Each structure stands twice: as structure tokens, then as C-alpha cells.
Image (cartoon, rainbow, N blue to C red; front, side, top):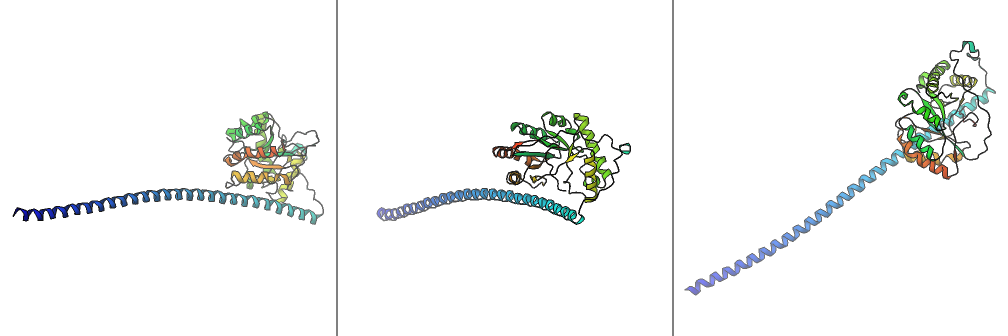
Length: 331
């Protein structure tokens, strides 16, 4: 009887052990698969992270290239406008045969409402050096100006600063520093407001006298150079020609530019500026380079060390403008 009971129990025990072994093996196998899946999921997550990083980097590069192209479009547009203006002026001169002389309202100094607005004369000097670059900075002074001055000092470079008074009054302390470091301090305008200053000859002179007095007051230096806001082709031909005649009568010399950094556009990048200057400066004689040291021109400041290094390595000497430098005029 006991033997009959023992046999079923034994069989049941064997079956139970087999079941435990089978399910244990299945559990271990399933656990191994789970670990494998977790490893694969971790690897997949890592791959996704790497792809996301690469995608972000690619997007940044694409945005930078798009900004570069937009900056170049602005630069090309600027050059096209200058070329069109020069062509129009040349066509006008050809059709008229000669310039028409206009009466000057201020030739009689006794009726001159701006009796102190006269530039000092300068002795003529010969320019024999072959590779001279004239770096110019418009729209300052600003918080960037001291940094620009320090960079110029590192390369023993002299430059010309065409200053604007309105909204820059708090930076007047940098005006004497420009003169002290041997640079040329020149006039750009008081307001830089095109519609106002190009309304008439008198409007231009009234605006110019304000920035002239501002410079003299803070430096004791009498400026003799100026640059028209937007260039001498920015206002109407009739008004600007009259202004030019009157400025020359008062002893002033104006300068446009023949190499543009393109930094007038907010889209222009550091790379744009370096390319625009370094790739084009060799195409002109007496290169006058347009840059800006006004507020927000951080790309210009970032590009300046490379520009100075590249041009210096190419054999250029950096000088400031004076009235003996062959003028660069659009008109």
C-alpha cells in the first residue's frame, strides 16, 4: 500500500522539478532577452542623441552659410548702386559737355551764417609707397572704439574715424584718444538723418556745424575731412553738387570708399567682412576701406584682427587719410 502511494508522489515530484527547471530556463532566457533589448534601446538612444547633435550642428552651419549669402547680397547690391551712380554721373557729364557753374550763396563771408566752419590747409606731401591701405571707421565713437584703437596699436596701424555726434555724446571722451593715438578725426554728420541733411545745402551745413563744434570742443582739433552719410551719391545730384562746391570753398575734402567691408548690414558676418576686404583690396589703387565702429558692430571688431594680420602679411602699411591722399569720389 505504501509502495503504491510512493510511486505517484515520486512521479509528481519529478514532474514538478521538470516544470521548475523548464520555467526557470524560460525565465533566464527571457531575462537575457530583456537585457539585450535594454542594451539595444540604450544604444539606439545614444545613436539618436548623436544624430540629434549632428543635425543641430548641420542646422547651425546652414544658418551661418545663409547669413553669409545674405551679407554678400547686401554687399553686391551696394556695389551695384555705386556703379550705377557713377555711370549716371558720367552720362550726365558727357551729355552736358562740362559742369555748369552755380552761384554760391556764401561766397561773401560777411553774410556767412557759419563763419567758423572752415578747415585748415595742409602742406602737400609726396606719396611714394606702393602698398598703403587707408582703413576708415564710420558712425562712432561707441563702446567698441577703445577696442578698435587697441587692435590698431598692435599693428602700428593708423586709421581715420568719421564720427557722428547724435546718440554718441556719452562717448565724447574717446575723441581726444583718437587724436592722441595718431589717427585722423573726421566728420560724418551730426544726425546721420538722410532726409534732413540732404534737404538743402543750408540743412547740410547746419548739421555739419554741430558735429564740427562737438569735435573742436572736446579735442581742440580742427577736422578738415568728411564723409557723406551713405556716400556722396546718396542725396540728389543738384543738392549734393552744391554742397560739395561749398565744402571745397571752405577748405574741406570729402572721401567715399573703394573697398567695402559690407558691415553696414546687420546680416554681415565676420567671415563676410574678412572676405570682402582681403579679396578686393588688391583690385584698387590707394584702397580706402569702409568699416564701422558704431554701436552693435561686433562682427567688425571680431574680423579686424584677421584683416590687420592678412593685410600686414601682404605688405600693406596702414595710414590715416589727409588732404594730400588722392581722393576717392563717386562723383
